[in-house]
Length: 439
Image: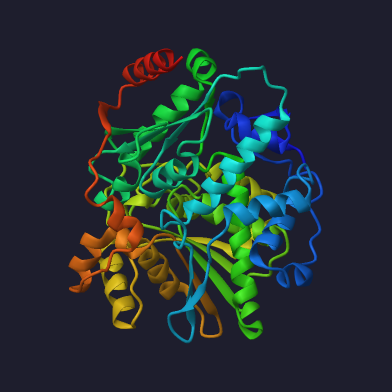
């Protein structure tokens, strides 16, 4: 399956080319050629495999065997070397915990796979003797920055720039990427995530910056991250009891809509999920759009679930393309917005049931409670470790949250970030100067 630019279908690329480019012409997202046949997977055979091996076969199929299943499985053995357990919350609800990686968030799956895929692309492509360093620029509302920084930290010939909205990322989230230095630079932007994301898009749309910096992006706009996320939905299915599978509803806390897009790709590949719910916070552009067909992003609101404080989700064009292609998927998809008051109640209710959660998964649980039918089993997606939001969780549940070792280690480290207004020319000048100094 070749990949096409959703804004310029004349641009067709291979998977490894898409990994290197990040964005297509006119800031278009690369996605499947939906007119082409989809891979045919043997679900029973896949479910019998270990997680990493299964993931290698799925990714090889998604990339049209551009990387062989054997080699892809070797990559996923390296990238996915931590568990993704399905943990029961109650008799009718479970949580797929995706926060057992090095930066305690689901972004570890995509970022670590992207780092290996980019290295493979650089080896495969015809390179000059001393190729210029790639500059990966990513915007983060919380977890992406840490996962990308960790995945590419001290990787040769790669520089990482993380833009994040100052004061709108939890202190412990920020510590994981603002304390690294070396080839990782963090820039606190005086604005919100949508402004950070707009700055990244402006860089990609600027030929001078894109060429001189050899730009790439590790946001979920990079297709490698999105593909990696498909794999853990199959892993969840393998862990669910057989009797629950056909009645399972997946509820995904959604900000940039990459994670829920990956769930829909899993369904398109044959995973027999009953329904998929995208749960948003007060930044409810998609739920409103599905109701009135009017795309009307509003000013971003700061919430307890800060990683989802996004009014213009980057991955929505991919989701919509998939839904328009497959009416059966559209019938299985819905979106629900959850208020701050309900987020608080959900976090507290989960704790009272004996499950320590945090606001993002709580949003998913609250959305599930609104729509779950008696015969259904709900699977919410746990996207980040509760300790990454220790202050706000402790305030809500009136109990201490123990910090895992990964957070203990960065707690006392000084932050090394720059501060900057949401000014494109200032950002561009800084990055070009920095690149010249390194050259």
